[in-house]
Length: 152
Image (cartoon, rainbow, N blue to C red; front, side, top):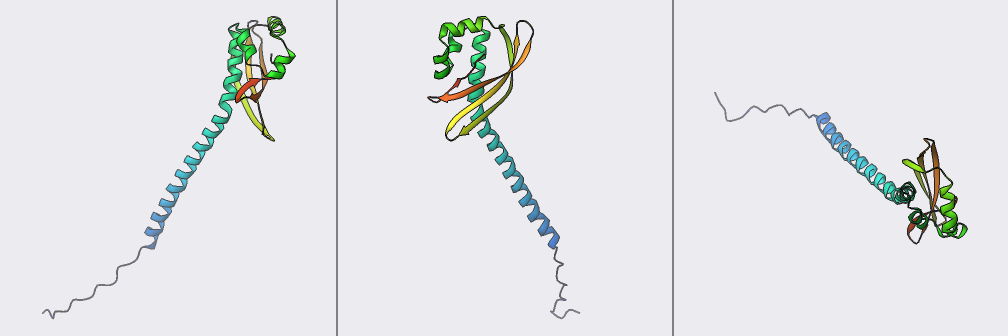
């Protein structure tokens, strides 16, 4: 016999853990995505700051490897060019063992009171077979990185 009344069903059991886990999962995905994006941006900003200094030092050494002393001299900063004439620089380079190859060893860019400088370490292999880690000081002149100090 049906009376027109339905038997009420017991209230559906709430599952708060399911809601909590879904929310936690979404937060975790967003945090990990943000951390990955932030790490990538940090890496790119460091690379953008150091790559031009590294390139300048490697170009300087590549010019010396290729025997293009004039081009290497053109990459020296003004104070170093004032200290060494082109002929004195050529003479100094000729008295050194010829660089046969080089590998990158590290770069450090500094900004001290608005004066931007860098040091680039390159591992130089001479034609004699001798290998030396040489640190090249660089300064930024007219928005160009220049090798400065005792160049080689």
